Length: 182
Image (cartoon, rainbow, N blue to C red):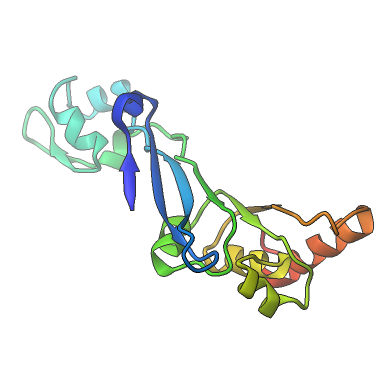
């Protein structure tokens, strides 16, 4: 697992990669891109009303710690001064050419907001899919359920899936695989 930040660290995005199983002797990676959570924002007026002037104590509050008021009379909890509605960091997982996903990659994908996963072969061909290093829509759906992905998008779809009926069948298989969750 590598975490790439380097010259783009200011973008507040981490990129992690881990192996997925495709076919023997072919190294294949999946990727997870995740925003770094933004630091919490202090409601300065609330903090002042609770006896904390702008200064070093704000850092502790932003990190979830309680602090003593400037006069030393009372404890102020972080949740008392943190602004509501902070933007949650988002997570994108991208896996292609994968018949199996090892635990390391599964952990990285956990709670992804958006999962892109391949669905190359038809239903009923799970054994063939694994031999060829690919997945079916149902397998994609099951994986999305296992890692608690909010949205599943399937890619690497075989040309044999032509027409709306075929696509609808794939969507139904994925929904059955993840019990309609994503």
